[in-house]
Image (cartoon, rainbow, N blue to C red; front, side, top):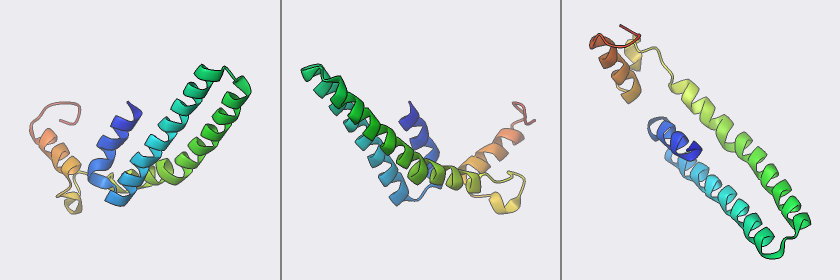
Length: 108
């Protein structure tokens, strides 16, 4: 769910290279977790699993610093006032203007 939500948010506002690297980082984290489950399920070695979890935790912290913080910055800079004429032409802004014009929802 997390990955799906981030993908939807990144589609219009985040440069392609960042999107690709961010998605790759998600895949890498998932593969690390799968590796821990596989080794623990096969050997039952909790010590190896704990070390693996430590590595995943470190990778997750790096992921947040390198990708999620940057994503938040991209999204914050894309959050424009829909009434500002300079904001026109962005899908989310134009959709908000259409939403207001339709007289529905909390913005009407």
